[in-house]
Length: 266
Image (tube, rainbow, N blue to C red; front, side):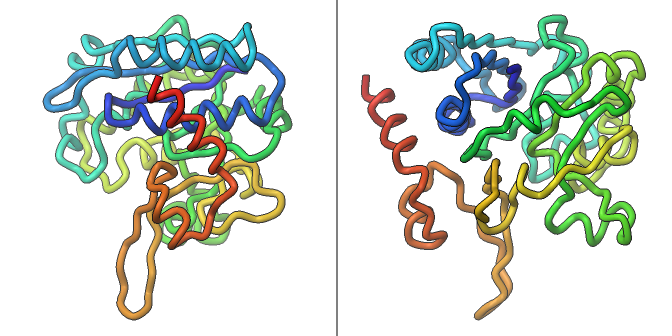
């Protein structure tokens, strides 16, 4: 199974936890691809981290593999200049450069670094993607404000099964990169993908942005809103252990958190 993560040095903890959760829920070998870059104040994920992750995942399955791909030069030559100052780090947009990286295979499951797996995901990974470019779950909030309000077809980009062969053939990511370079948007790469991609909706259990349900496969720790006693945005990530317990009442990932801490101490 081919898995893609993207980001800078600041997302290492999330990648490690997400990768551990994947190993826990599949016996198949994993090939983890990490796209990273250095730009401005953002520093690329170091090779030491990918080596550490490789060592840990190899214990789970000797065939597991981690490939770190630093595309600083490529990214620097095509910066999303219209969206460099948004609240979203520009390195979120690294996934839009995957078509330029020959090592990325034709079928790959992209995951945000705040997504944890809690069940077997084979049904999603081996879905028929012949006639689409991406598959994903509608965005929890965006589905009401973007796209078609009746079809709820505005996808959250945190979990995407991607057909890279079709994407390379159609030039989808090139079009998205140009859109992010020239047009300022609230959620740049997600909005560009939704506007331009040939896409398909998948069930919410593959990207649960709210409460965990019995059939949830991937839990995505997105920012959410609380309305009492006043309206406010709340962000709690998987590595915020205290808040994970006290505010979300989520304890099922404690074994993964403990394993990460042990590995980090080594």
